[in-house]
Image (cartoon, rainbow, N blue to C red; front, side):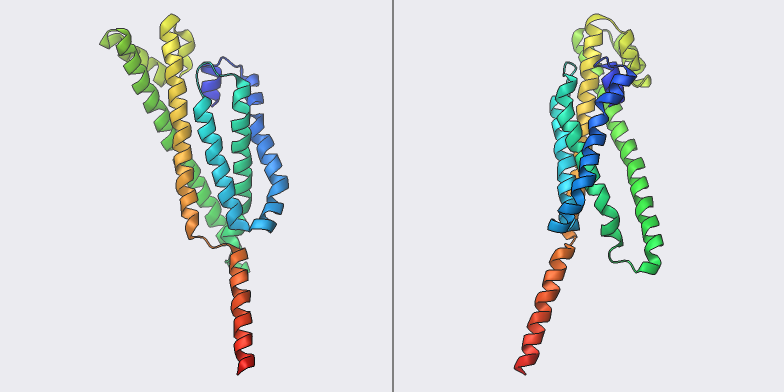
Length: 232
């Protein structure tokens, strides 16, 4: 996001930081509302809701991410994504630790944190690869269509990709516009890739039972057992 915002949209570092504030605001709102949602819906459903909100936020971001988009058009998507992150992440520890004995809670928390860090590292690697592979392919194809010779467009593509897009500001005219469009397309692909992984996470929660549902089933089974005993 910072690369795209500063290189393509022309924001300064300060403006970029301010534009990313809605993510924090969304997470802050989630911190206030998540306990109430967890009490009403149960932990599992809150996590599903958070993941779904993150997916919608990233898809929304991908839908509006062009080289001419206004910063204000990005705010709702970023805030929604931040709300989803705050909602899902806040409930993960309780979901992981709820069936672990108290004397092993430290080990459980350590495993959960390690898995989360590994997932973050892998996500950065995969989404970063998607971003720069998309940028190289899109830019190479566009420059070729423009009639630039093979050697020249390969040199330009390598310069832009190796600089993580920052070299785009040194290009001129139509070539700069093409490079900006290519980075915007790569950003959209990266956002959709993130949404895809979140969708897999959401699907994985199907196997999780809601603690609220378990308590209801246990209470129902206990009631039936008592009635059966009374009949005997």
